[in-house]
Image (cartoon, rainbow, N blue to C red; front, side, top):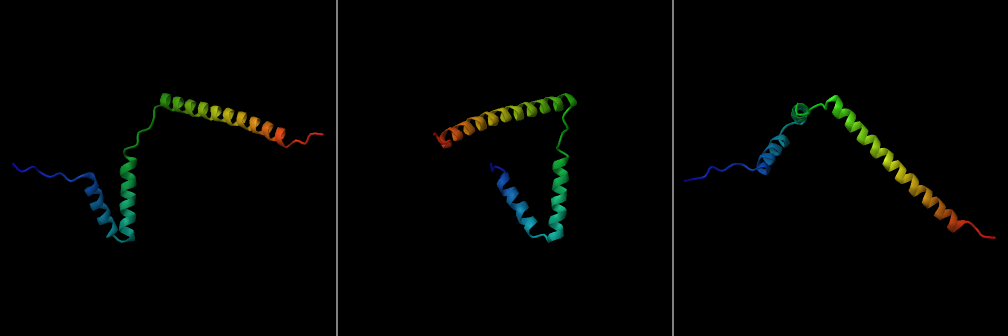
Length: 88
């Protein structure tokens, strides 16, 4: 009982890279465009409800980071002015 050998993903990728390396500049360009279109076919658009949800999450995260950075800026400003303000 001989088991059929299946090529691993690493071997398949290496073989593809070897074939791509032997192509000229135009062949590599065409291969790149084909691969881009193949990847773009896999993309799915979010629904309107998902889009609103994602937008809300991003905006909330941005506001949270702004508040944290503003608080740190305020603390560092007060620390620097306390340390470097001359006393009379």
